[in-house]
Image (cartoon, rainbow, N blue to C red):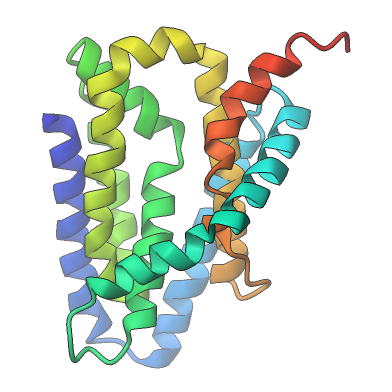
Length: 229
C-alpha cells in the first residue's frame, strides 16, 4: 500500500499548489487552464483507446455499462457524495462534486493504476506507480486550479481503487491477463475522451454513468474471443 499512499499524497500536494494558483489567476486564465486540461485529457484518452484488443467488445462494454450506470444513477450519486464532503460556506458544492468526479476518473482510468498496483502488491515493484504519481501530481495542479477543493477527495478514490488491486493483485492478475488489463485501460481511455469533451465544453456527457463499462470490458473480451469471427 506504500506506493498507493505515495500516489495519493502526490495528488494532495498538487491540489494544494493548484488552489494557490487558482486564487492568483483571473477568469480568463482559468479558461486557459480548462482548455489545456481538456486537450491533455483528450490525447491521453485517445492514446489508451487506440490500444483496445477488441473494438467490438469495447463498444458493447460502453453500451451495457452506460445502460447500467444510467439505471443506477451513478453520476448523480457520486456528485451527491462529493457535495456532502464540500466545506460548508464555500458556496459552490456542485463544482466540488464535479472536481471530485472528474479527477477520480482521470487518476484511476489508466492501465498504470491497475498494472502498477498489481506489481507493487505482488513483487514490490513501485516504479510504475511512482511515475504515475508524478503525472497525477501535475494534473492535480491543473484540475484544482480549475475545480477547487474537490480534487483533494480524489486521493481517497486512489487509495480505495489502487489499494484493491494492490491487495488482490495476486488473484486478479492471472485472471485478467495482459489482454484483460489492456481492455480495461482502453475502455478507460474512452471515458477520458468523454470527460475531455465536457472539459472543452463541446458536449456535456454524464461520464460517471459509464463507469460499469470497466467491469464489462474484460468479461466481454473473454466472451467475444469465442465468436467465430
